[in-house]
Length: 382
Image (cartoon, rainbow, N blue to C red):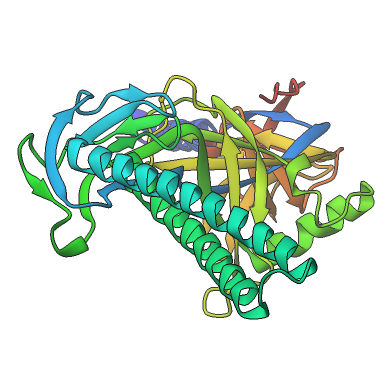
């Protein structure tokens, strides 16, 4: 056998060994399961809030008008100023009305004198008739004159009262504490022509202030049931607190209480009109503002998970949980309000469920993961 012949079997064996070695080194090794952080839902007492959008409205807003004709002789405030009740704001030439009042008072004095004279004559005639010295006709004439003078006095007193009222209208004062708008007339301008009231300005009360909002029919029924459990009737709306925040505020810094709820639900919208009242000493809240409204309810034990752990698809919201074999499952949930960075879970979870709270993007339903358990802290609720 030649050397070449002896080499061929050797090369075949070496090639086979080489192929076998390559096959062994290229064998697929699966990657380790992805690591995720899981936690049990935290159970804590949560105050349920009804959150709505509302508008602020003035408790009182009145147009100041000239109720008598005349020239404006003085404007006694600065546009946009806050004034106290009774502060003089406008003056309409008082002299003609003061003269009419004096004239009416003088007429009353004259009528009183006339009545005193006729009363004396009546009493004299009554005595004479009693002594059969005068006639019945004289007595009747004295009685009629006395009654006529009495009626005249009453008429003059009424005229004097009207004159006094009109004289009072020459000064337009603030009917309550509030902010007065820019004046709509000038000094020297004739107002109240043809006995038609002329608008002079508007005064608005800003402390306290109302907040108006609407509550859905379902929320109305829920709140009524909760209040009934607490022994409160539907008339106890003043016991229900209300909190308000402006669009630029963090949280709800303004607080008050409800003071009115409509007696009926509006059929077209299925909502109930509700109103709250809030102190507003610094006028930080202005009528017409849109605000965020929050009405706290009674506290209840709830499960919470981090809001970032919640996903959503066409079927609704869900979380990813692990089964006993650390395999990822998708769990449909009913989510409630947000508390800090966590969200209330109304339905779909149990307190011993392991929810993926970090590494959600690495977790695929149906696949196994490597979990690390952490403990969640209950959020503070303010």
